[in-house]
Amino acid sequence: MRVIGLMSGTSYDAVDAAAAELGLDGDTLTLRPLGHVAAPYDTRLRAALTAALPPAHTTLAEVCRLDTRIGRDFAAVAVRANRALCGGRAELVASHGQTVYHWADRGTVHGTLQIGQPAWIAEATGLPVVSDFRPRDVAAGGQGAPLVSLVDLLWLRGRPGTPVALNLGGIANLTAPDGTAFDTGPACALIDAAVRDHTGGRLPYDVDGALAARGTVHGPLLARLLEEPYYALPVPRTTGKELFHGGYLRTALSAFPGLPAQDVVATLTRLTARTVADAVRSVRATEVIASGGGTRNPALMRMLGEELPGLPLRTSDALGLPAAAKEAYAFAVLGFLTVHGLPGTDPACTGARHASLLGSVTPGRDGLPQVPRAGRAPVRLVVE
Image 1: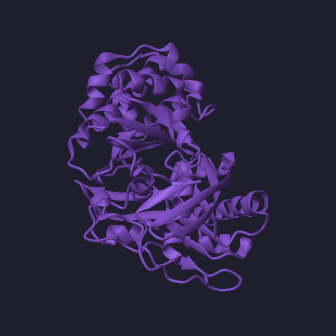
Image 2 (image 1 turned 90 degrees about the horizontal axis):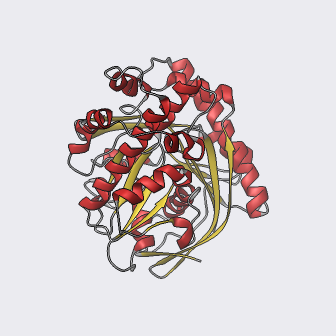
């Protein structure tokens, strides 16, 4: 089955689309990457989304407008991916949507909201769409994240030692082979916020890690940031920009007025490297396989290597999944599992009471997907 996975992460800078040929061979799920494309949100949409996200206040009218505008953007990228990557022969779209709120309180997740109305995707492509993946796991007592952890478990199974899958988006998360999976804290969220503040919004992120490379880590600021109680919560735990946002950063910086921008960015980059490394050590990893936009930041990857001396650190490209699109491929897998009647979670990863069949299905032009229900869940994923 040819499936297009759509994803926009906590950095909310672009919509990523990855196309894959997926199939079940006994207890093995096979994935053949067909390619990926990305389309940045236009400046006005990104500004509107930024203005609506916590801790800002918004209205239901604005949420409705964003739901439609993001849905249309996702639809346009899905149409492009189908034409360019699948020759117009895709059979299913799996859309993560855009997370706008993850309701977590003292280690318990009560709800989660992703927008980007799937009806626009189904109408534009004519294909059935699986969406709204996270709420079912939350309803079953889980964290609803990291939701790609099941795919990581299947993908890394059989590798020697204790390989850890690490995603460096706005928020960093990892998955270990024993099912331990959690958000470690910010990856690029605070770095991006500092760069936007410093440049008046001209730059959305630290391009090539240039600012961090020119700066010096400020010890007292780093120590203050490391006092954040989130890092001491038991796993599984999840977080987002509800906590790690621009206002959070400005509050921390108020105790250190006049710090040069490059020193602030260097310190925030070290914060990410330090908290990720602490999490990696906690699961006794023997190898780290990283993906996400943070892998394109040389300063962050250098600092992470310094925090984990001697530990192999490579990107998912080395194992056949492009680091820039791994999460989009993962949601293609989750959509495939859903239409085959297979669970898309592992309770050990999210803390749920049981594994769940994820998502809601929006019919395509020809109705619901016509696929046989699979007999058993796969135990491994092979990337061809």
